Image 1 (spheres, rainbow, N blue to C red):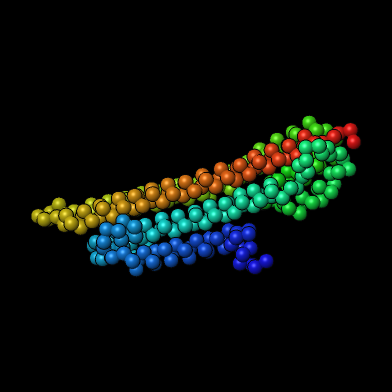
Image 2: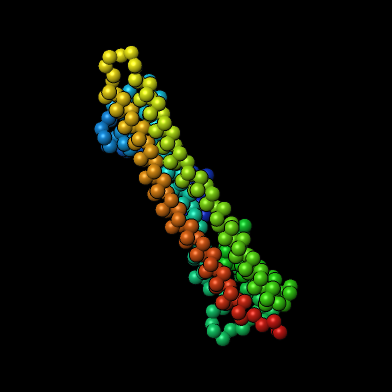
Length: 265
């Protein structure tokens, strides 16, 4: 298997997706910087790319609040991609026919070791919800010869898997909080900068520069809120898909393994 394919598609590594997200965000900012006119409305809103920055402006382009939120957005989308690939892998396992699906099949104790040998290489601590459930249920049944205890183990395992899936979204939840927070920080900085331009002793105030600073301050929040909403949307789509994979794995195991077990064999 191509190592690059494995790193970025088959089983995306966190560090590889992080590096790719940074590169894509830099490319995104660079392309927009070339396409948009410095000081134009679009450049100010999206990039805070000013032709002539206000006096004492704290940000030197491209190190602006908007570009920081762009970076955080692409980091979040990279993590969404990792979770989407994980969910796709789990869905693919459901289609592999790991258990007999014929209506008439009944499983006895001597039928289970070959099934366990087939599913054991397909799961580890990170991936393989379905093979892991099958393996665990077979072990429990072979040890106890009790269908009830096997069902109890299945239910407990599903709860733990759901909790594990939920924990995997902590980074995304943090990013959806961090993006608008960074935007609000930009707003505070912009308002402070505008207030610093006011000179009570001066007869004429630089209203144009003050208005520009205030406008930029609110643009940071606008961009951050939009990008946070985009990230929350995709995060929820992928989380639902991954949780459905857990539910479907539990249903498949219950239907094609536990309901076919014959304790008297």
